[in-house]
Image (cartoon, rainbow, N blue to C red; front, side):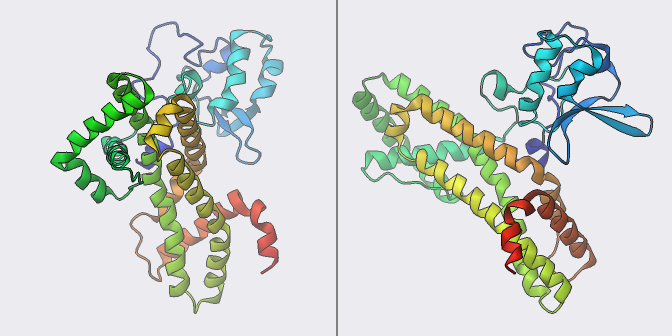
Length: 330
């Protein structure tokens, strides 16, 4: 999954507003007040307090108006379509970084599905993982396999298809539902888990930043200033990495038993979606960081040092508060 896909800010072509049509405010941010027709205006969370604001170009400057103040400032009546949409903005900005008038409302708020795209390879990984779980369940030794090559090898084994069909039949008998229902539910689970696999793929770029810091700590060990900065960055990023690792471990554990998944189908789907949305929201701020570290060679270099400074600022800005007690003990 590319950084751009993680950071989707506006509706893509498939979800953009049809031109020349009156838009349904239950699906689009179709505002009526003239303030929302100002060219270039958009909604975004404020950098300091993360409050949803409406940004308007004022010549060479950009003004930010908290969305909670818009109704009072511009005479938007309570209960109106605009007022209702404004109440949705804060929730919508959990899923996209920026919203412009007439953008589509994120699908997470409409039907629970994801508003961002994934690649076919992520669906293949999810399908391979569930296939392995079906086959291992049939043998009485259910397991989680995440290695891509191992998944591909098992999935492509000629005997696997027959074993999967056998598993479908046995599960159908145990649950008292048709085989078709089993297949349909499994397909739904695969579709939802594909988003977790896409996020896992993206997370590898975040985790690599931590790995790079470890390597650079050794390279810059004779440079006291840089070495101390890297040490502080590691203190800030380590709990973040552990948190992400724990989230993936937990969702893997909650989706590792096929029969349990199918017996608790709706709650499982909701758990996967909740985890998907939580990770996606947490990852949105990492886009520039992941891009900034791509292609860098880990050696003493001015480009690396510039990226270290940018990374320090990013980590301090976003994660310093919860880790300040640890810094005080250094």
